[in-house]
Image 1 (cartoon, rainbow, N blue to C red):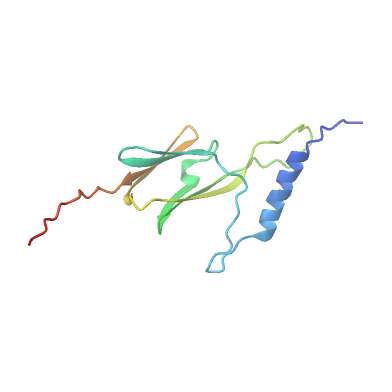
Image 2: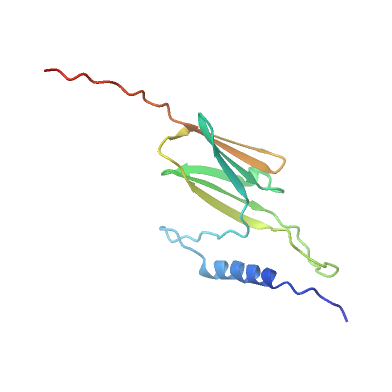
Length: 144
């Protein structure tokens, strides 16, 4: 008899993923939008001249990542290919996530869509969003 460790939280996470797939959100065009199989962790910081989003996406080929800016929303999506294993025997635990991911971020009005760059290095994606040039306030004299 083989003993298996009971982990109820893993069962809940699996149920959540299955419910997400069952609900399968639809876009305005009626096409299917894949829900995220996993969600990469991100850090967001503001610097003097830019906003920076850093996302952990280990095992994702940079050519499988799409970064898009539209209507003030920055979208990062991609897919981590799973290893095709026909045989599940011998596994004691499978915790690594595979599949598609999808993150959206609302950008402030000061973000400049023309100054967005993205680079991936060692499984870390860095998206840098430049800020618009600040218009200097102008004093207006009042004539009598």
